Length: 106
Image (cartoon, rainbow, N blue to C red; front, side):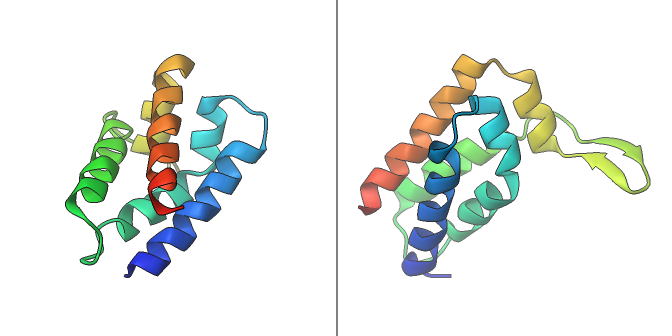
């Protein structure tokens, strides 16, 4: 993956996170797949270590709870379970970290 791919995915994530008026929990849960994609893209060799470290922190902090398997076809991910258990004020800090990463590329 490249810097360009990372930038494109981060811009798409910012649009989805900050255009709607939902609370931090809803924004993060709705965009779990895209957050994961940006996290994976941040591990690109042509990105700086600081960016990689920031995304590792965000991803690891938001995946501390275990996933819950409800049925064979239905699972609550570690990300969703963790985000659901945190306060909105705490989750807003992660949105701020994501926005700060965005500010680096514009």
